Each structure stands twice: as structure tokens, then as C-alpha cells.
Amino acid sequence: MTSGISSVCVYCGSSFGNDSKYSDQAKALGELLYKLKWRLVYGGGSTGLMGMIAQSAMGPGCDGKVLGIIPNALVAKERECCDDADVNAKLKESVDNHKGSTPISSKYGETCVVPDMHTRKRKMAEESDAFVAMPGGYGTLEEIMECITWSQLGIHGKPIVLFNIDGFYDRLLEFIGHSIKEGFISKKNGLIIEVATTPREVIDKIAHYTVPDGRFNLDWDDEGRNHG
Amino acid sequence: MTSGISSVCVYCGSSFGNDSKYSDQAKALGELLYKLKWRLVYGGGSTGLMGMIAQSAMGPGCDGKVLGIIPNALVAKERECCDDADVNAKLKESVDNHKGSTPISSKYGETCVVPDMHTRKRKMAEESDAFVAMPGGYGTLEEIMECITWSQLGIHGKPIVLFNIDGFYDRLLEFIGHSIKEGFISKKNGLIIEVATTPREVIDKIAHYTVPDGRFNLDWDDEGRNHG
Ligand SMILES: [Mg+2]
Image 1 (cartoon, rainbow over the protein chains, first blue to last red):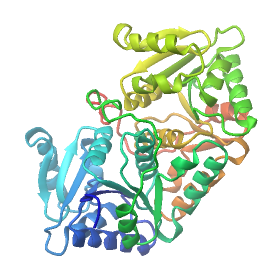
Image 2 (image 1 turned 135 degrees about the vertical axis):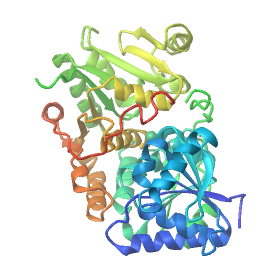
Image 3 (image 1 turned 90 degrees about the vertical axis):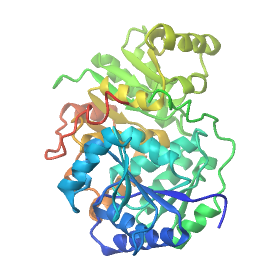
Image 4 (image 1 turned 180 degrees about the horizontal axis):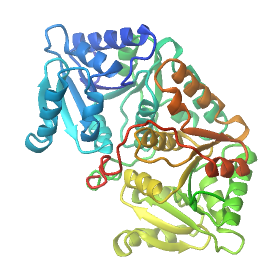
């Protein structure tokens, strides 16, 4: 396809939302990643859209590439619906015994347990060539905003795409437009975000992404790689 | 007033926006904090709304309480308009020599330089009894969303108020309303955010804040205090 993309981070809700269109699209995007042999990097949960896209990206034969990254404190909460007691025990174990990364379930791919949410975000970002936000709650919005902030600071120049299923993100995009109009976000930095309405378009926008130039020039080290 | 509030974190833009109403309100909120003898905790910049509210909260006699927390990598960028070469040199020095905290300028209060942006956010949160978001860009949105996420997880139950100057946050609030309607944010967690349109109302909403119950029960340690 293009430009060395082989691993895509998808931020999304740990709930399904109350319309099947959201899980249908999560499933469709997962299937497309599977077909492209791109790896899915995600928050490591088994519930809601997270669980749906992970299962789907693993493919019918469970031979897809999926890396779930979950903070220790959320293991019990977001790993609820599967073989939970067992999985949780193994996940906890993995922190101490397997450098936090262990293939835990063929259903959800490889899981990496990290000590805290900040490490989760950093690792999700570092393991990925592009970022997609599907519908979700406060956490999803925070994650994609952090990612945009890092791009704005020049820490990375990776594609960022909002998967705007049935207009879910319309009001947020209007808010960002208003922020540009009012002088709090530059027009150029408005271009950091691409918007797609189908899984195919998500992939196309990633493949043809152009990073706005003239941003700052910090790097991961400036952001405290060796400290945080 | 109430409930042990004496230190308020204000997230806001490092630019002024393109209408004086934003800096007028930043100034007014700073003045009110000064009168109440509440401490302002903020991002430590001297530019835009950040610089405005910091100067104003210091009061006419520069005897107010202000704590600015700035990551090392941003010192040069956000400390532009004052006695810069000098201030920057001192700030850099402070990381190594003064545990990162030193009174640097009577104009902007005490400044604390931290190694990275994550540490900035954590310290801003821990040093504050309440959180306010004024207009700003991606960074401001990310910061207040992280704060909301921490409240949702039960890591803190501190007041969170959007200072909605002239409808700046209307579209974001509509987006959050839509997320609730679509089942990605619970109605209860919609109540985490209070909205105010004047400085006085910001203070009132902080003073009379009720934290929604039944959230999760993580704490700062779960979130990696000892790791991150
Ligand atoms: Mg964040």
C-alpha cells in the first residue's frame, strides 16, 4: 500500500454504544486490518468495541496480529467477558515473570500488561505507525487528544484519523473548527486530524497522510522517555 | 467559603485567542482567586491566557499565590515574553539544583520545572483541590479530559468546571451530550463536568460541587505513582 505502515493503534470505547452500527464498523475495520496483515494495537480490553475489533483483527483462524496493552489496575475491569479468573491470574503473573508481554488468548492476540495508564499510552504510541479513534468515551477522547498534542509538538508525525461513524464526531469537529476560528488552534494544526466515514477510507487516509509542517521539534526524549 | 478549597488548577491556552474577551475573563478569574487568597496552579507559561491569569492572580502587589509547573522541554517555548534568556537559564538550573521548584519571578509566582509533560499533569493534579478549563487548544482539551478520566476511575473526586466564555465550549458539550445519548458515557459520568459562564460562577460551582457516586475505585498508586 504505502509508506511502511504495518501497525495501527485504534482507540475506542470499552462499551458497545447503544446501536449495533458501532460494533459492526469495529468488526469491519478489524477484518480489513486482518486482510492487509496490519497489526492492531489497542487498549487490551475484551469488552465493547475494544473486544470486538481485537477479535475481528485476529481473523477467523486466530492468526492475525493484535497487541493489547493494558494497565495492571484495569485488568480486572476490562477483561470481564472471557475466561476471566484464569486470564486475570495469568495477566497479573505476566507483569512479574514475562516482562509484561505474553500471548494470553488466541481470541484477543498478544497482551502486554503495563504498570500504569501513562505507560500504556506511550507504548501504544511507540508500537504504532498510525492512530485511529473510533467512538468512545472520555478516555478515548483524551487518548486521541494526547496523540494530536504529541504531533503538534513534533514528537511524532504519524497519521491520525477520526473514524466518524454516522457523524459521531461531528460536534467535536465543530468544536475544533470553532477553536481554530477563535485563534486557539492554528489552521495548520487543524490539518493534523483526518476524518473517515468507512473502514476503507480510514485505511486510505492513513496511507495518504501528509503531516503539516512547521510544528515544534521536540522528541520522545524531551517528553521524558528516560524519566517517565 | 467551603470544603477546604485553597488551590485551583486552571488549564488554558498559551495563546490569547483573537478576541479580548478571553484575556479579560482570564484576568477577572485571576483577580477573584487573588481576592479569595486561593492559589492558582497552572502550566507555567508566560504567554497568552496562561501568562494573563498568572499575572492577575499574583495581584497588584505581586503577593498572590501562584504555582506554575512547566516541563523542561517547553521552558524556551512558553516563557517567551519576559526576561527570557535569564529566566530560562535559571529555570534550567533549577531542575538540577533546586528540586525543580524555585521562586523565579514575582510577576508569575513560583515556578516548578519538571522533566516531562506527564509529570507536569500529575503534579498539577496533586497540587490542586479543583480543576478549571478556560478556552485553549488541543493541549487544554487533553488535560481536562485526563482529569475527567481520573475522576471517572475514582482516582480523585475533585471539582471539574468548564469556564464556558461566550459559548466557547458549547460544541464540546454537545459532543459529550451525544456521547451520552449513544451510550459511550454514562449519564452519571456526564455529571462530572460543571459549566460556568462567569468567574464568580466558576468559584460557586467549585464550592458546591458534588462528585457523582458509584465510580470505580482506583487510586493514584494504581495509576502508577510509584512507577511513572
Ligand atoms: Mg493524557
